[in-house]
Length: 72
Image (spheres, rainbow, N blue to C red):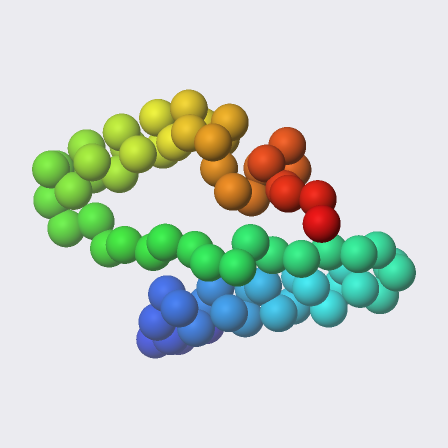
């Protein structure tokens, strides 16, 4: 992929994956946003690891959790 940015790589990957999945007639949607970050030092790495380690604890309150979708 040469000198492409992280955003370009993710865009390509998501596009290609979506294309292949749609060929199987399955419904599939990516999460609407993603967080990318270049890890520049140990402190940054620590913060990202903590985010990953603890993020699942927020799932019960997450608006994208199917249990929290309000019926109209």
